[in-house]
Length: 95
Length: 492
Image 1 (cartoon, rainbow over the protein chains, first blue to last red):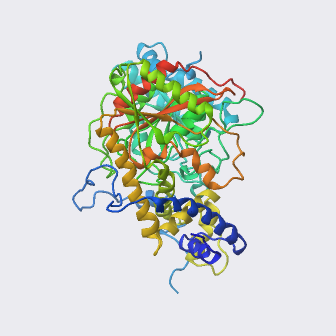
Image 2 (cartoon, rainbow over the protein chains, first blue to last red; image 1 turned 90 degrees about the vertical axis):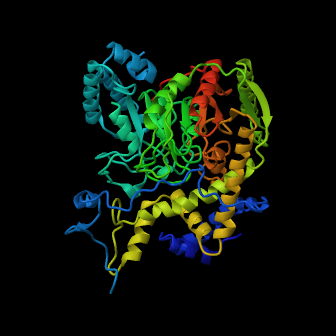
Image 3 (cartoon, chains in turn blue, yellow; image 1 turned 45 degrees about the vertical axis):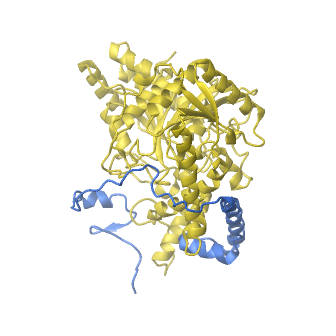
């Protein structure tokens, strides 16, 4: 599977990583190389094999659906690049 | 011998007998750490905290009945969140991040009285096999054979370099595809990746959650047993953490493996494998046989598909886990231009904050999870993963107790030497180790010899799920038979 420049641009957009237009051909080439390596997987007969969900045959732990944590907004906001009045601050989202 | 050169076991015994204080031991490590800056292993030093912990440890030791890790100075991989101490995962995107919480592993270690000297270098988000993707620049292998600087391996390269150079007694590592075992092999130390679920992942920056597992990197197998016991155990904060009891790993080191069945997988004899790797493996097989083990040829038919399956699954999970680095809650946020909205903020922040390899893996992961390709890549890789695990299940069901393989396809290579190769070439470093992560098994790298150049070389032992005790005993036998004692000559 070869990745063209349009696909590379779309993947970068989906990943929310800015890639300059001039860097897209190189990116497309790298992604094609890696995906080419993965093509080997098509050789494997996987008929009747379920995709693995959990590597250990254990059921995920469950607990009561209750609030068990919280109440420290200052600690939550302590590492924010921009926090104001008890909130994370971001550029305008809605016009 | 200065105290920083001691093993955990010897230091524990000396501390308990009062022949050594935790403060003196810590001071010796802090001196070695400062003299070791040329290795670029410690990237955030915490000497005041270390001395405070050491004084508290001396108090506990004086009162008696202190745990084994009490007063033992450790290095902690930068991937572990440590409260109030920089925890950056080797990435620019977490610059300035000081967690408000403590990872379960470090909390357990500190609760047992261990001392933290500082945080250790690593590949960015644990993605790499040479420590060269780190935002701090690469850690350097204390081993050297000419004027070149060699890689300590990755991703836990700082941990490996620090332990091999005696800057600390031991260090934490994490292993998603070989990140404990490959650097251990490159630096002549011991590194164990426990069974998936044995050690809590809570508070460890996530790379690929279904594969990540933390473990100790130490100077001996006994130290690995002592250290692992202090890290392991159930944690309600990690839903994949096992409720199984943690056995006394050190007590399992009997040195007796008579009658045990050690499997030798034929698929690990790769085309183009260097003669020295082949010869080392043959020596390891002879050692296990001399110790009374029964050597059995086994087949793990899907081995060759492990790397491509891994490089679908790990980036897929990484693309999801790393979505949280968006410039809002922690770490770096890009400077915005007039009129930039939230999408530009995300895109610029992530372009500036993530290095090349991390960006590449996020985009590969994004692609294999995108509509139209999910089934062809991601689901197929998960099916192949099930087959890889089934291969192991079958040989264990046939009575195999442990599997012996090479740890790495070569000894340590020079920093910068892989800079211009295809990314896939670098991925081949993990060829013997990724299968173990995909199958969730415990695996350990043990130093067994040196190549013609004089660089350390290791072998890997793979154990049954939850049988770290038996695995460590096999490793102990191999360690004793190999009698590996070489140390890097100090040049730094």
